[in-house]
Length: 87
Image (cartoon, rainbow, N blue to C red):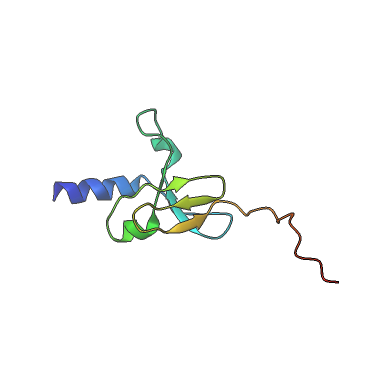
């Protein structure tokens, strides 16, 4: 019971946020970021299952290591590669 209450309290420290690509993530609210608890993003899919799963991130994506949910962080620039030449 205590563990469930602790998880619920942790979720209250997060906010829902839409990424520039339209996906949903749950970052830690700014007022809760400290040296002991750095900024991070929780998976909204795992949250629905009452799991706390910190997403990994790179330049373009947030990825959940538990359920494999993928959220776009920003749009990729257009590819500079051109298709095959048609003669």
